[in-house]
Amino acid sequence: MIRIITIMLIVMLTGPAQAMRFKIATLSPEGSVWMQKMREGAEELARKTDNRVTIKYYPGGVMGDDRAVLRKIRIGQLHGGAVVGGSLSKFYPDDQIYNLPLKFRSFEEVDYVRKHLDQRIAQGLEKGGFVTFGIAEGGFAYVMSTVPIRTVNEMRRQKVWIPNNDTMILETVKAFDVTPYPLSIADVQAGLQTGLINTVTTPPIGALALQWHTQINYLMFEPFLYIYGVLAVDCKAFAKISTHDQQIFRETMGRIFREIDRLNREDNVKALQALRKQGIEFIKPSGEAMEKWYHDAEAVPKRLVNAGKLSQGMVNTLERLLKDYRSKQLRAKK
Image 1 (tube, rainbow, N blue to C red):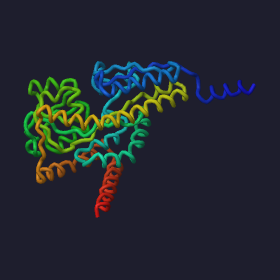
Image 2: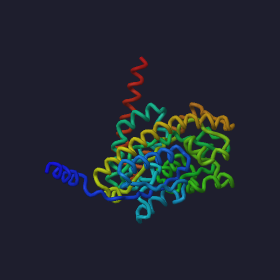
Image 3: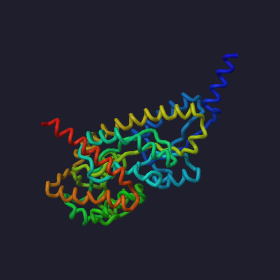
Image 4: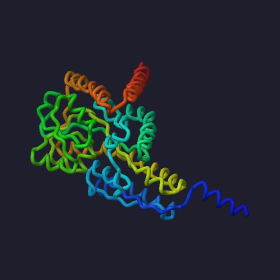
């Protein structure tokens, strides 16, 4: 009798064990760290749920760029995507807060801010319709080009690529008075080869994985943007599995994304070294040039707030956290 009652309680708490195969797409190529770890997570998830929850991945952009993936999620063709965080801004605008240009000067600053804001971003995205499993660092993105760029004026003379679905980057280039050339990520390589564009901003691992490094000659050695990615699963699809299996899903992929987060930082360091070895010249702007870069970058948050793309409250929180961290560092040096 006790055993029957126990089983009934488990069923009541976890709900019916409905089998679900999640279809998830990503631009990450097969063989990349992202795909290796996500496949590891899928195998563990299937094993722990007795194959009630399985994942079929569509890597390498076969389902299109992030915008195409989100459109296919909306019509039910896909259930989720491993996407760049900023592509989800429609569902929670403040998820772009880490992408403000020239805000972070070191990984230590990033870590301090993320410790306070990662969970808020995850909660905001879930309210917007997507379950996520932690943030995975894409790393610092650098300006890379076929010609040397040290100053804002030099940047204005270039054919600067921006992702065709990223309003954050669009407002950024407007603040620097740069003419953007919007293209899907899949079209960037051809754009560089034909001269349609000659400047991209990307993390080192991205430049190598997508082979863009074969077309560029210079890297402005100043962290320009901080990029991150998430595995975003449609809340409606996620709700179809039992609460017990949901918990296993969260725990398993949460651990996987913590590992990706750590590995990507290590790989970005190695990728920078690889770019140097490829003969790409690293350019460090002068102090005077950086003052102009920082001055123009300061206009971006206000533009985004005025356009309704970012909340003033989140901007204020970021500024407070950075001020707190830098004050602590100054006191520690005295």
